[in-house]
Structures are given as C-alpha cells and as structure tokens.
Image (cartoon, rainbow, N blue to C red; front, top):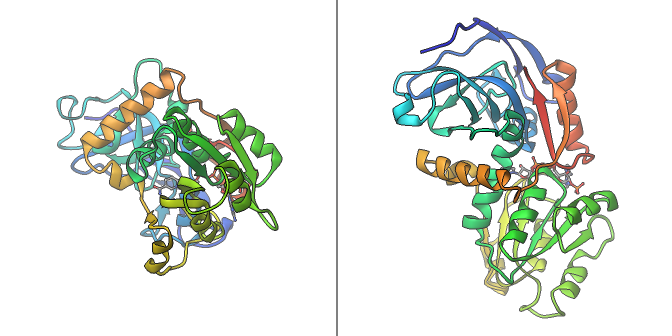
Length: 341
Ligand code: NDP
C-alpha cells in the first residue's frame, strides 16, 4: 500500500567518509521498500553525535550512505508483512522512526519494528527531538545502570542533548545528580534541568576533588554510584576515580574520541563494573521498542520530561554541514533538528 510517491527525493548523502565537505544534499532515488519495512515521509529528523562518526570514520557504513538515524513524519508506504494489525499503524499515520541511516531525506526507510505511532497531539517535531536520545536515556538508567533513590549519579556533558535527558530521568528516579559541562552557561542549563551540582571540567579543573566533597569526603565508599559518560576518551580515566566501590561506569559515546582498550584488572581496585551499551540492543524486539517508546511519549506528554531544542536546520548542503560543525564545536546544548518538510 502506498500514497502517490515521487521517484526522486532530496537526501543528505556521503559518497566517502571524511571532513565536513563530504556532506552533500543531492537528488537520489526514493528507496525501495522490502519485507517488514516502512517508508516514512519525513517532516523532522533528529541530529545525533553518531552522524559525525558515520561521516568522519569512527563507524563504517556501506557507501554511498544517507546520514541520519531518526525521523518523524507520516507513513508513505508499507512493505510486505506490515499491516495495522501487526504493527499498529497504516499509511497516513504520524510516526517516529529509529533507523540504521537514511533519515536526512524527504523519504526514509525504516524497519517496521522500529516505528512508533505518535499519540494524539504529539508533534512530529517533539518526536524527532526525543526519540533516540530519550530512548537512550530511559533504557540506560533502567538497564545499563539501574538508578535508584539515594544514589549519586554523575552525567558527563550534562547540557548536551542526551545529557539533559539523563539528568532529568536520574533526578526523577530519586538520585542526587552531578553534571559536568565545559562552560558556566551550560552549567546553568544543566541546573535548570534538575542537576543538583554542576562541575566545570577541562584543563586544570579538579572534578574528582569536587565530586568527593559533594559525596561526603574520602575513601572508596565515597564518590558516585554510577557515571554516564558520552564524552569518551577525555573523561574515561577520570570516571574510574569518580566512582565509589561497586559503582558502574556506563561508557556510552565518543564525543572526544573513542575510548582506548583498558586492563580489566583495573576494575578490582573498587570492584567496579563497566558497560558499553548501544541503544539498539535495548530496543531490539518490537515489543521492547514499543514499550519504551510508549513510556517515553507518556513522560513527555505528562510534562515529566522537558525537551530542549538548540536549533533547526534546513535540508540543504549548507544546513547539513552546519549541523555537524555546531555539534562538534561544543557550542550546542539540547537537540539539533533538521526540518525537512
Ligand atoms: P551532545 O549534544 O551531548 O554533544 C556532545 C557534547 O560532548 C558537547 O556538547 C560537549 O559538551 C561534550 N564534549 C566533550 N568533549 C568534546 C569534544 N572533544 N568534542 C565535542 N564535544 C565534546 O551530543 P548527543 O547528545 O547527540 O550525544 C552525546 C553522547 O551520547 C555522544 O557521545 C553520543 O555518541 C552518545 N550516544 C550514545 C548512544 C548509544 O546508544 N550508546 C545513543 C545516543 C547518544 P561540553 O561542552 O559541556 O563538554
């Protein structure tokens, strides 16, 4: 089943990996639907740090590759094996889609199992703002390190897109939340989102000392119970010092570069746990994806999770290059969106 479709579309495609200039918005064929897939007519797409890894080379997609891993819009067509009975949506419905790529385009393919129908009154703009980072924050505070009342939780880059959501969820779960940011301006933003303490990190700053002061002194039973770290290379070593005995390090991203290998023996000094989760493996089944998206949309609709949009960009070569210049320059806080239609 399909609406009347054009055969060509605008898309942000890379033909090789490299510097920002590899990003080009060009006319390409509208992708062909296969079994179990949905074609989404995109209204908004969400920008994520992962887009820079696919463009720059940390992750290796098959080329040519259309960037973008999440979109929201309407269902333009469904492939074989997808029906309202099996998946809960039909052509014309408003949906959000979590994809393996291809979202910065007028039409995007998605596995039907990773498409959620939007509740009444939930805008496609909010959906593109919250889907990936919201599902990440939600699954990670429940499954990567289960945040519990009374815990101290540290969120690195707390004013980032994901950071602001982690702060709010950890706080709502009853933790005392410590955030780190690079500037005082971002510290204010993290505080407004609910962080109890915000520490500026970077050259010459004593984050560890400050965390021990906040958590009550010295020794292996001080420090935080859990660290959520999307900064990666620059903060990984520090994370070991921030944690208390039996604490969990959730290393979840590479904003400053990939984390190098480390010796497991290092964990023994405080019996720490380290995990390196990826959202996709927490929302692997249709049921998992639907359950978590429903919970996420509820949190937003009930006003329990506030969304922060940093900026909106057009689907043009200049606009798309600017998304990656902005997110890697550390000047943004909150979500970057691409307005497609
Ligand atoms: P952000 O909006 O958080 O942007 C990244 C932030 O990282 C910057 O704003 C900056 O904050 C901080 N940072 C520290 N060092 C650097 C550096 N050298 N270069 C650039 N930024 C730096 O991005 P997202 O919210 O999209 O993503 C945050 C992290 O979460 C990323 O690492 C991303 O890959 C990861 N992620 C992982 C997922 C998973 O499944 N594992 C899913 C979704 C996101 P400041 O200036 O305050 O230091």
